[in-house]
Amino acid sequence: MKIIQRTRLWFFISFCLLSLAIGGMVWNSFARGSFINLGIDFTGGTLINLRFDQKVTTSQVRDVLAKFELQKSVIQMSGEKDVFIRTDPISTQKRVEFTGELEKEYGNVELLEVDMIGPVIGKELRVQAFWALLLASLGIIGYVSFRFEFKYAVAALIAVLHDAIITTGVVAFLWRDIELPFIAAILTIMGYSINDTIVIFDRIRENLKKYGKKRFVDVVNKSIAETLPRSINTVLTTTIVVLCLLFFGGKTLKDFSLVLLVGFSIGTYSSIFIASPLIALWEKRK
Image (cartoon, rainbow, N blue to C red):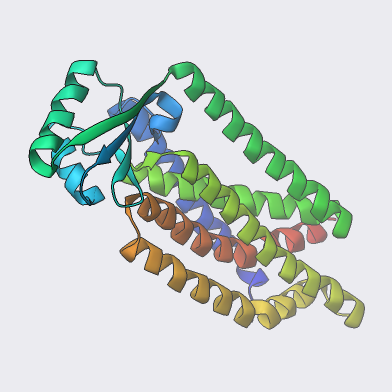
């Protein structure tokens, strides 16, 4: 298996994917006014808690909200009769109107709570999301440098950022809402990707001790070949679970699952075809 000998091909593929991802976000900024579609968690909005006299579903509530152009609202059930709605900022009159429409369709509706999420809170969430990603990146550099060498940490971080950018580009291209679960999904992808990368790095270290007289490139190729079945089996099993969530989960889980599906696939690719070739390239230049 000659993975490292085709490094230029893998880097070219990643360059194309990254270019499409970044290009898609830039196009969004001109065509839609924003790189990505920030959701209510980041831009602010209205939180409404309603209680029905009878059992309702999110689809029934969404059908009514669609009449008031609020079909993109995030709807969550608490039990069979309590509904939490996160929607764009709306006036009291509009809230009264769609609440009245819900009463016509499904009986008495009790308004339990109404909260406004202002832009200040949204800004705080953006800052917190940035720090979460930054601390995760620093943690990766620290852990991998401690367990291996600094060059391994740099290669792993580049691969992880590669995964995050491409995944974000896909979500931006599809114009899906970016909510807090998206940040959780990105952090999950980073954890998955770094775990897969460390397995390969660990095998490289073992084989360097075992086959010290071989060329470094040959050792890396052999290590990838030995860990490839494990990587394939892992991504296939996780993909099956994520696909079940994507097709059978609710609306909130669908977006979360889509991000995971893209990220896990790209993460497996980067561990094999980006992180490992970067180590070989570093060693060659050294």
